[in-house]
Image 1 (spheres, one colour):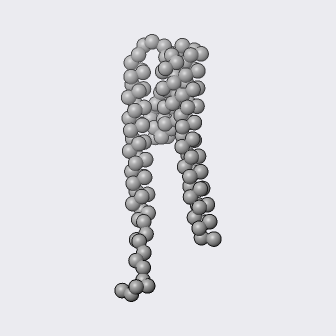
Image 2 (cartoon, one colour):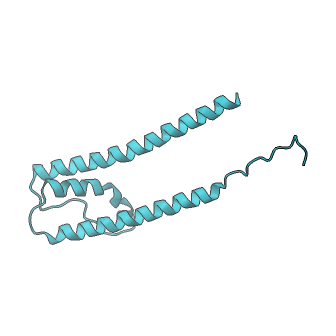
Image 3 (cartoon, one colour):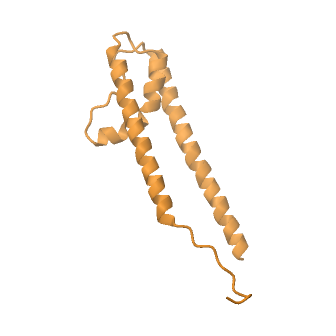
Length: 125
């Protein structure tokens, strides 16, 4: 090998990264599905009306129930026997908190990707 040749590092294996992310996402989805079923079963056993705390939990878990609902499983996403305004306030706060976390992470990652791409385009110019 001559002195002018430089060993370039091997390109990253993209498919391994994609597979790892896919498996992580599937495991997280399975865990969330299990969590929803456990929470629904525990809440169904209670005969007392659902209050603020139960509304907060059901509101936060409601968006995660979509895959189960699409698969045809009946998932309780709203308690019929509730305390009224307190439950509805908790439910609304749970849905909004879950959305804020999800979209916050999504836009944070999108912004990070945009910065990375802009940094790479400046280096090549």
